[in-house]
Image 1 (spheres, rainbow, N blue to C red):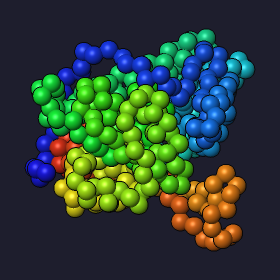
Image 2 (image 1 turned 90 degrees about the vertical axis):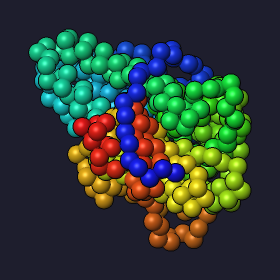
Image 3 (image 1 turned 180 degrees about the horizontal axis):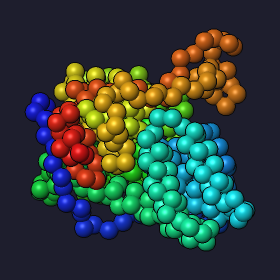
Length: 367
């Protein structure tokens, strides 16, 4: 891959929304429904929430996950806090809701971006009825903008891969992805999985290999489920098989999402992403990160500044109560790792693409 750093803005595509048949959240004005992703693929169960505390708990418990979907859900949580505020000290109630939502997950910057955006709207509200209307409208706008960003990123990625100029004559490719970055993790189309959807829509996808993604198995439970539902050719693989797959030479790109991107282009994403980047570089396979600009945190200089969430050990020692390891054995269970910018070929956002990211390219696009 070319080692020169480059960034450029790209036009917003004219293509309209595409339905995937899969959604993770449904807004009803006075309530929010979240698809319980912990139960997939065995059961499709929706949880109805009418307050911010319930939304915060669902984010913490991973009922909803994926950085963009977390941010959207939190925005709706603030809107629910306003909708059901008592009236007397409604400003304090909404401020407390924002605080509670902000503590639900530490790594995904989209959560804090969405809450800050909601808080700016809230600060301009003088009466409760105004807050209820404006906060609900802002949450809906965040949701709609995320879907539009997903569609833009998919178009930008194909152009950056050199596939969009002559779609009819471009050769189909195979790709590998990690975790779930599809409709379940976003406003309804997908980031990395959105690029894969667009490849499939244009007849450019031979196959997608989906890492199972231990320990929560988002690749097997969620990505494979989405792809099978939408008729996209997928082969599920154990995380440890990725090296053998890349060594076989079939895969052209590893395409992943992100939970936070820093000012130098370092990327925090689901644990196991870093090792994929190392494998991709060794095997001369392209490595692409696809995420909305709300995932970019220019206040952090490098990945060393990103807080990495670590969850308790039972997630690794067992699956749904079935023991996989000796009881009480110590477990190292970070949710994310940091991939250095030097291992990344493309960062794709709705604002544009940074090639071989570094400080110069990131600042050129994001300021």
